[in-house]
Amino acid sequence: KSPATEMSVRCSHLLIKHQGSRRPASWKDESGAEITKRTKDAAIKTLMAHKEVIMADANPAKKFGELAAIHSDCSSAKQQGDLGPFEKGQMQKPFEDATFAIAVGAISDMVDTDSGVHIILRTA
Image (cartoon, rainbow, N blue to C red; front, side, top):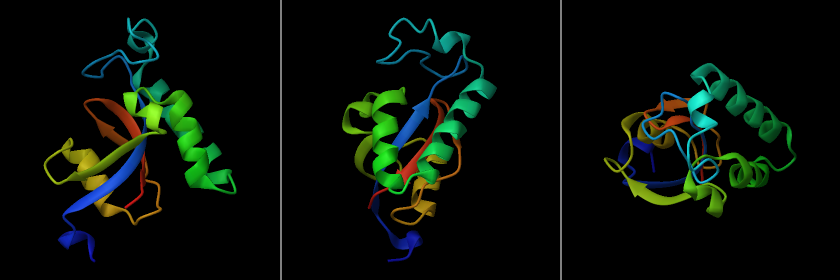
């Protein structure tokens, strides 16, 4: 299937929220005390440091899940970042576009949404 004709995808993600996120709190920081102090630049630096560790690992997909479980500001961290399958129109557009654009098994560059900054691992 070419990406243009695919109806649904599945992915995992690692989200780092920052003070500009639409909901600056998470399962790790319910009051938002840390997130509201985190600048967007700091969130990007943190995210890209995680990506470096992931890409340097012998099994990047496994490392992605391990780091998402510990560091992601999304409740999907409990599933190693797995968001399950979704179709077009179900996610924020930049996130959707990035997921549909990469190959299964690939890890995206940084994706910026209203939720924060993400890296995405496409799994189906």
